[in-house]
Length: 77
Image (cartoon, rainbow, N blue to C red; front, side, top):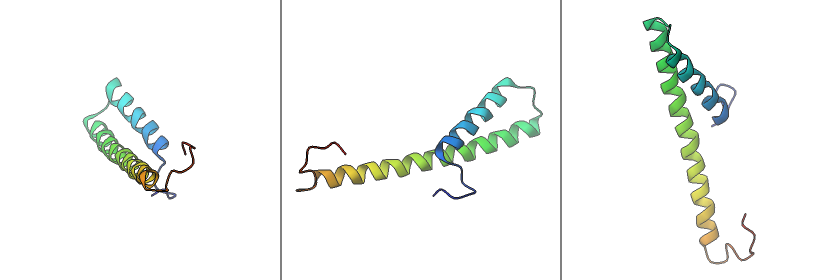
């Protein structure tokens, strides 16, 4: 998922926060507001994609642990 063009979750979240702050501050033209809104939508989708990937990894790790013999030691991770 992460390549040179795709920001990390943290980068996308930070930029999304900035987009929201700028939209809330106002003083933008309609065109600027629409561009920012569209960028915000893309960033929100990207963040959701990152989070969904993390959920899948977590579920897989938990399933492996629940398998017989998968969690014989008492270490949490």
